[in-house]
Amino acid sequence: MYVDALAPLTISRAIGSWRLTPGVVLAAGAGGGYAYGVRAVRRRQERWPIGRTVAFAIGLLVLLVATAGWLQTWSRSLLWVYTAQVLVLLLVVPILLVFGRPVTLVRAARNRSRPLPAPLRLLSSPVVGPALIPIVTAAVFFTPLLDDSMRHVAVGWLVRIALVGIGVLFALPLAGEDGADALPLALALAAFVGLIELLADSVPGMVMRLRTHVLDPSWFGIGRHWGPSALSDQQTAGAILWSVAELLDLPFLIFIVYQWIKADARQAAAVDALLDARLDERTARRDDATQAREVTGAALVEPDPDRPGMDRPWWETDAGVLGERRSAQLRREAEKRSRRD
Image (tube, rainbow, N blue to C red; front, side, top):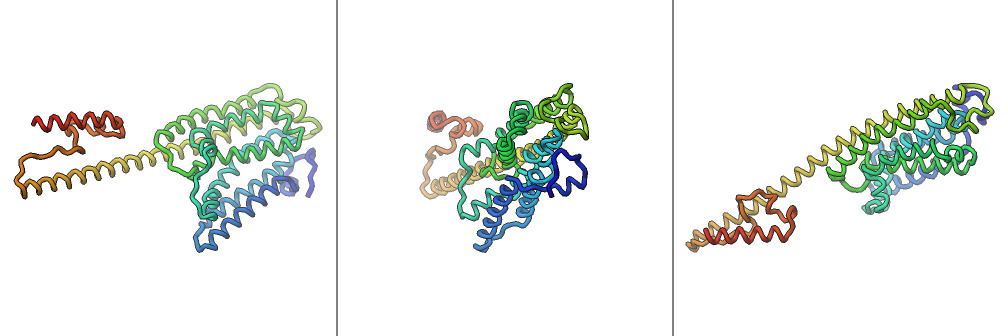
C-alpha cells in the first residue's frame, strides 16, 4: 500500500505503509545468506541453536520496519521519525543481528576458525566501538549530511547502510563475536570510555531539544500542513535522541563492567594455576634430590635454578615481569649465596 509522505501520520496509515526499497533487498540478502549458513552447518550434523536464528530473524524484521515501513515513509517529513529511524538502525537492529552470531555461523559453515581481520578487530573492540556512537550521531544531525541525506536518495541510503554497519561494530563485543577474550585492562578502559560516552551521547539530544531555531529550515516542515511545527518536531526529536541513547548506553556499560569482572577472574585463575604448577614441579625436584642424597650419602645439594632467592617475592624474580636478563642476574646472585652457605 502506497502512502504519501505528506499525508498525516496515523496508526492505520503507519500499519499499511510498506514500500519496496533497498532495505528490502538488504534484508532478503542477509536472511538468505544466514539460512544458507544454518543449512550448511546442519548438513554436517552439527547443532545450531534456534535462539540465534530467532534473534537474527527479529533483527531482519525490525530492519524491514525501519527501511520499508512507516519509519522510512515519514522520515523525510518529520525529524522525530527520522531520529527514531537512525537510532533503530544504529543501536537496535545491529544488536539483534549480532546476537544471531553471524560471524560464528560463517566460521562454522566454512569449518574454519579464522579471527576477524585486524582492522575490524580494532574497530569492534570494546574501547573503539562505543566511542564511535556519539561521533556518528553528531555527524548525522549537525553536518551537511542531514540536508544531503534528505535531498539525495542515494546519499540517504548510504547513510542508512553505514549506520547498520557501524552499529554492528559497536555490538560485536556484546555477543563475544570479536574472536578473542578481552584483557581486563582493555575492558577497564572500555568501561571508562563507556562512562564518557554515556555523557557524550546526551549532548546531541540536549542541543536539539534546547535549540531555539530549526536545524534544517529548508527541509523539515516544508510542504507539511499537519502535525507539530518544525521547531516542536525538532525538540521532540531531541528528547527521543537524548533519552533513548542514554537508556541503551546504560546496559552496555553494565555489560562491560560484568565482562571486566569475569576477565579479571579468568586471569587470576590462570595465574594461580601457573603458580601451583611451578610449586608442584619444585616439590617434585626437591623430593628427587632428597632421595638421591639418601642413596649416595651426598652432603652437597646443588642449587635449584628455579628457586632463586626464595626470600624474594615471585614478582622480583619472574622473567615475565622483569625480563630474562634481570631474572638471570638474580639467579646468579642466589647461586652465589647458596654456595657461600
